[in-house]
Image 1 (cartoon, rainbow, N blue to C red):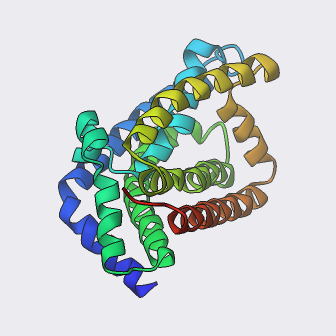
Image 2: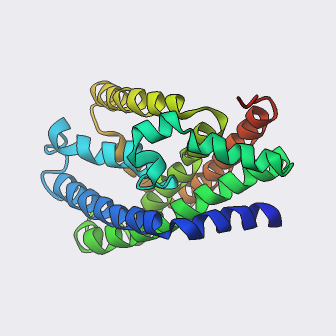
Length: 246
């Protein structure tokens, strides 16, 4: 674990500009999400639950928040041609293997790197979200219900963000691009399907579930986060152990 922490920290400290950009982006997401949620919830409660109002909230939470686990403003992601032609993540993996670093250490370093990026970004995201929505939403729910709702989405973000290091080091540049461009339409289709089937947006369903028993919702969100990170960690180890580098 100590070696994995050292690897993750040494890489992250050289990408402070990309991390700062991630943090600023997180602040914007938190502000816009709070604005959209207040507009949807404080308005005509059920009457305002139309796709045009509620869809942006679901899209922010389901599709955008988990991407904070990757440095989206680093060179690897800002230049698609560089990502595909230079294969920066595979180059890093070759370097790790050259020094005979075990797959478990590599996998842990990637998960820790992801959690550092996500944790820093989520701290800013949640702070801005709470500051922008607290006064308006407090009349709609108690402090415990508000905290449970926030916890659920933090747990979700950690649970699914493990896919970032898995794609980066378990696949290649083309697979990352394909995953990004096919994943978004699938998420959009899933959100609209959920809305048409249940008659309400995803975040409202989560909101009602969380307010039913806030302590259970918070405990389950932590459990889901741990299981998600552990699952992607295992999957990445399996992939690294069987990956042949060109």
